[in-house]
Length: 102
Image 1: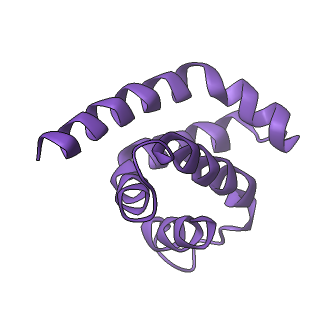
Image 2 (image 1 turned 90 degrees about the vertical axis):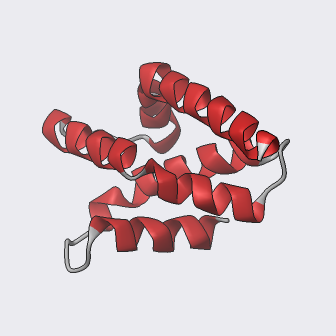
């Protein structure tokens, strides 16, 4: 339990840093010109449903690879967001993309 708590606290800290400075980095990596409103909506949904990414990272990575996998999933979600049609729940789509990335 202590190990999971440490990972969770590190992930929360990492997520806060990710949202504070990596949106610009995501744009550069993906060459994305996402509309501000769409970008805010994506980040709100991502923050609200981040437990899905943490669950995938806990299952498919070790402590050293956790941050890398988390970042890879976020990048893939960002790149794929334009293909989300809303035919399913956002969480279903997010889980699917996360699993395929892991």
